[in-house]
Image (cartoon, rainbow, N blue to C red; front, side, top):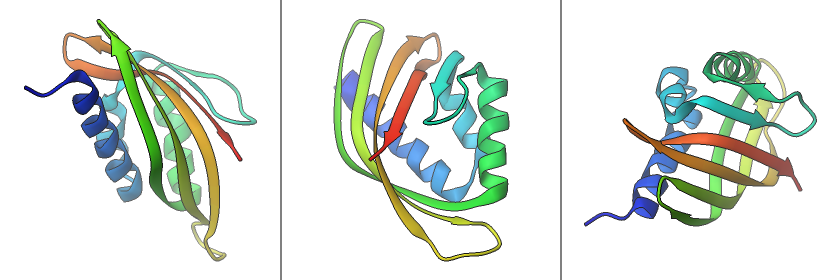
Length: 126
């Protein structure tokens, strides 16, 4: 039997694949309708529409490829968290070479009627 941690790990791996493809339509369903994102240096984003708009602008202005470096998934009941470190190779879409940025993130996941969804997401750059 597959555990909740394995299910969340697979969902997050799907998130990374969709992000690396620039596939907004595959990313958005992974977020809860009540999602709140806290990107570094930016305003809080509440709800799927705000997240869709923010990620859409990111894809319009950047090329990026993310790699997960480490991960811990724990939880209880309908709540779980995923903690990890990441690397992103990023470049402005029309110019410049890629640079690598690194950071850490913490995601809170909530189980709803459709499965596990990203409920809160905060990350920083190191």
